[in-house]
Image (cartoon, rainbow, N blue to C red; front, side, top):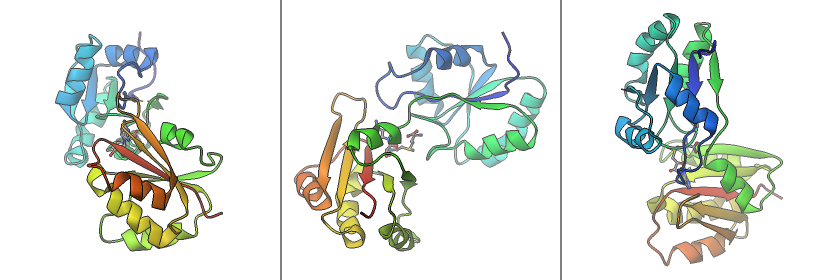
Length: 226
Ligand code: SAM
């Protein structure tokens, strides 16, 4: 059955393959084609759920070039779903440009609710979740100091994505802006076998992680300025 929606944004699991909604599976089966950040990763995911569907590459490096063609197909009556490697597309992943272009073209866009790493990290942290800001990945070099200086006065809980090999360096840097006694939580490998949520002051988190080789995917949640 067709709906009036042309573009579906479909969140996929961030680890545990049980974390996909019944509606997401139905939409993935029904659409004419699926735009995927990495066709191999998403191909494996679809295979797991027994879905056979044409996957079209759509990632940071081609999105500007492919949008025109995608819009033409959607305007012609086709329907498609956008998935990323994990979690919700357009959250620190490609998607925003396509969503904006579809809206501008008068096409109907629908984002399904579903997995994303920052929500369980925030809730698991035990740090105030009534007001928060999502920073995604901080800039690496240029702009990092400016961003962290602005965040030093931030009163809301802050959520940051970071890579495992930069975790300790980032935590040490955060002590310079937030103080070593600021409360924080590092969520690693959410929904996976080796999930851990380590809570404490920045100083305590550094002491815990500097003794290890940090692997896996990381979200850092930092309390706002008290
Ligand atoms: N679109 C995704 C989302 O909705 O969360 C984010 C994609 S971004 C390219 C990848 C980053 O998300 C990782 O580097 C990590 O910071 C975070 N992430 C994704 N899966 C995770 C997991 N299972 N545990 C902890 N962090 C995760």
